[in-house]
Image (spheres, each protein chain N blue to C red):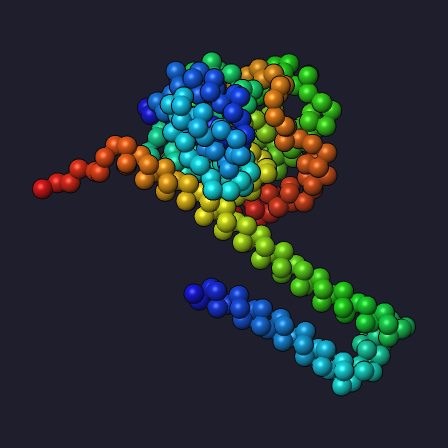
Amino acid sequence: MRTVAIVPAYNETNTIGPVIDETATYVDKVVVVDDGSSDDTAAVAKDHGATVVSHAINTGVGGAVRTGYLYAIRNNYDFIVQIDADGQHDPSYIPELLDAAEDCDMVIGSRYLNESYKDYSFVRNAGIQFFTATVNFLGRIDITDVTSGFRVYRVDRLDDILHHSDKHWAVEQTLGAAREGLRTTEVSVKMPTRDEGESQFTLDTFALYPIRMADVMLRILIFR
Amino acid sequence: MVKRGREDIALFLMSGFVGIGLMIVAVYPNIFEFIASVMGLELKARAILVISNLTLFVIVTYLFNRISKMYEKISELNEELSLLRTTVDEQRVDGPPEQDD
């Protein structure tokens, strides 16, 4: 079974090297999708032996993730491991996620099956739980952490659920997976809070949430 | 090309509709009194406000939709370009593919 790790990255010079080194021990190939970084992320990634796919312009994490999925599909990989470039995701959990993927199509590394979420800010927690509750209600599933970017997918089912939105790709992906009947499971993964970079959950994100969520829901529920 | 033609036609029709509407109002300035009575509004000014707001709403919705579609196309182009560049780089490193004789 050929496995590729996809690492979407934007200005993560300080953390991308160690992430690649640790991840490479568990997968056949590490692909870093550089989303138009203005620093040396791409160069550092290449130095650490990763294949780098560089976006000409920055389009957001959803676009970088989608590019990674397309790479895995077109190069005939069996499984794809998605892991963040900021060092929040511990690569030592990859074998556990891949084990769970043997009987499933999508495995999510959940922060809410352990106590990782207790260090998060109120806004961040509220955002994650609101997204999760909405997807569980609309998709009739029971997931604890819909926004986690630490995932494993079975590649031959990925074509059915390729997302379109850039900001809330995880919500669209998970809702799409529920509607397509993908076998989904979660694994408890501890994720410390970010020491470097910016979280995607800010008050701006929360304020724009109703519009973006309506967009995602319309895409999945009506237009698919 | 056909799809692009359809978008140009839609823009042309929308511009034409707004232009014809303005010409009608210029030739028949009291038409808004008739519109106000049909809509059950007391004042001509309110009818003008309602019609102009509706027109703006349609135009803005259409333009937002076009912007959204253009953004999706830019994203797709960005992704395809990056994957193509990577494929070319990988072939450069691995050498040209072997051909059967």
